[in-house]
Length: 344
Image 1: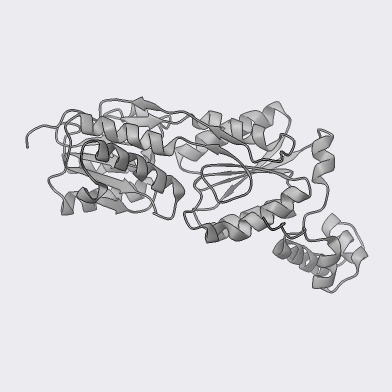
Image 2 (image 1 turned 180 degrees about the horizontal axis):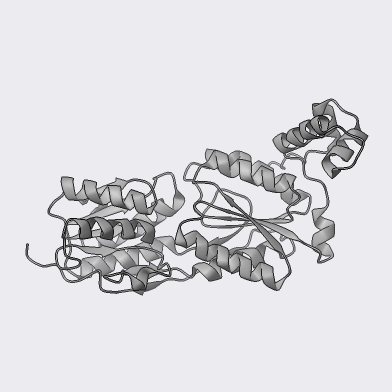
């Protein structure tokens, strides 16, 4: 395999910015003797080329890591809130400060957040949330993170990513198979699925699990409607309206995360559709409010707080020659929102 390009040097920043090495150094260190306009220009150049001051190895080796970065897709989603809680728990134990960034499931914005955290001399970065099915969408992020790690920075991700870093891998495919098998075991065959963007590896893996459950019953994913919409409560709300309109014979809806499932329940309640009497609803993740909904939500539990804690713990370990991988496990939480299919 070809060796990664060496990390950008301070001299590269100075040359690109058109300043002396001393001016580049003072600008990035925030020292006096450089105008703010020049310092801002140098910082922008450093951010663009992915320059990282070689301070990480020293701070990590000496146990003096002070700041870690956490990038999440959607901070308002309870899934990411619980992951953040796990990260913050470990950080508190170790006396670290956490800077949380929001990418909005946009790979370009995710790359910008990575570069910003590095420019701010963050010592370790955790990226929580799905990767992208197209490796090209994360090629530049991989290059920047590789350079960051070459200077001693630490990185871990939660989810399946095309990144050369350590990873905590949620049981998305087997959990999808479990929730699909549960709904099928109740006699449902007219099932609708609400999914996020097909570009997300999480969506692809969860759908693959449901497809495996369908195949076990002699069915195919092609036999049922799969609607891709926003991976949010609003997306679930809009998707449920469309499914009810286009497929009024459905007896069950599986949403690929609990936020979407909450949107589905809202729509069914608005239309006076009994759950699970007329339509069963299942989600995915088991966020903290899932058991408290009315009806309580059937879902697949992933240990989100533990995932966040494991990711930061992994990121703070010494570098390894081989990328580390950690699975999560999963558990079916059968509650009141699913029941046996009934004649309509």
